[in-house]
Amino acid sequence: MLKNFIPAIRYGNRLTPDEAQGLVPVTFGSIFFVDSATGSDTANSGTSPDDAYATIDAAIALCTANKGDIIYVMPGHSETPSGTITFDVAGVTVIGMGVGSKRPLVTSSNATAAVSMTAEGCRISNIQFALGVATITDCINITANGCQVDNCETQVHATSQFTNHITVTDAQFVKLLDNRILSLGAAGSTSGIVLDGCDDIEVIGNFIHGHFGEHALDNTTPGSCDEILRANIANNYIANVSTTAGDMAVELDAAATGWFAHNQLMSGLATTAAGFDIGNMVSAESYIADDIGIDVHTIVIGTAAV
Image (cartoon, rainbow, N blue to C red; front, side):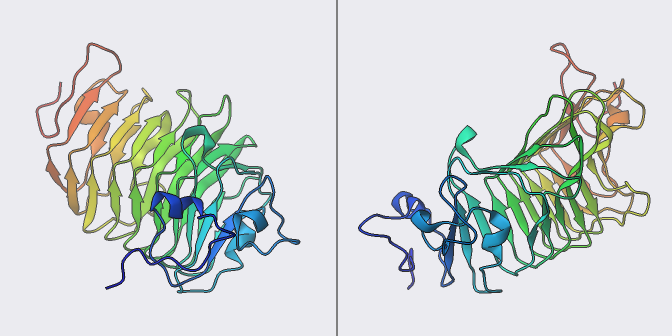
């Protein structure tokens, strides 16, 4: 039985950083490295930390579709792409190394998506995203089946906003896991996560907090949005501090189905009933608080409005 299979990627007598921690995923594909401190997209091979590429997008171009290729982005890596980072090779995984402020940082310098996932079965993990211009349409835009975004973070900017932080459109079996979506307390962002016709999606363990001019978790904007079916939305903390009527913590299409379980919601609106609409999903032990402050408390969704 294959156990902790590691390709021959050692350099000298040293282990790769993930190998040393026992975190290398099982793969028969190639492994590449990205490091802004020492890397080069033209002079290096990208096949070891000592010979790394400088940008994520260039490293994706080294990959072969559906082979399970992995790109490790080294701690402290920082890049400011002038164009979109496009996952256009199926089955590619990008993993950021490091913890906290040492995680790789991508600072968008144009108004297009920071990341566009257009090929199936891709994953991006443990990357920070920041703003370098006033407005970015989507931080992460997913249009391919089976993609995953986990342990990523959109940072709060002093004045700028991502319009939508993560948008998923017509893609099945997508997983959004354990991400932090942070926006200003002032008006600016439209939505934290937008779900448009993406059936069988899993939205689990995410933290969403900010002022959203539509909804923190949204399945109705734009008006042409299709419902989500068989969704699993669980264990999220979702807050929309907007006090404008209609700006909800969660608003799902009336025909949305699946489980809405163990979520904690906070709405800046005057009543709990005004702060959410989960369509036709089954609610299980999810709670909401209205308004903002230390003297408010959550009630179970389905309880009479307060």
